[in-house]
Image (tube, rainbow, N blue to C red; front, side):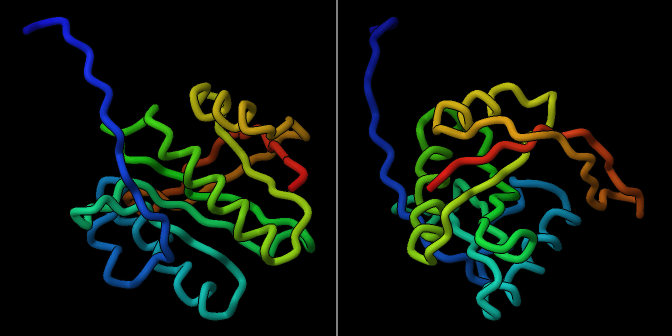
Length: 161
């Protein structure tokens, strides 16, 4: 029957990133992005960052993102938030952010911050719906293929935890 609507629940578990997860996150970006994720592992060991992945019951990873504890004392900076493109809009990103916020609260932090590129209105809408408010802008950059750097202007948002 065509035109039938079926509601499907997706069960995911949020857990710490492990070294063996890197090969399963190739959907989240290029080689440079995977290198950046790998560089988080020593920060986790040093207790300077949290990084979570979202795993389906079959073991497939469908979301990832972290909280950097170093840039601003008392603040967790959420970064590298990503949900598999085929599963966006289903609440997985919300779950990831809530799980990271819970980690920050457990550490006694009172504020979370994140930034979003100006050309990413869907993510900005999600962050604002979750209670994040604009608090400025920044110029950010990161490595991309060919030894170049991608430079962009972002909106910085904050939330009291």
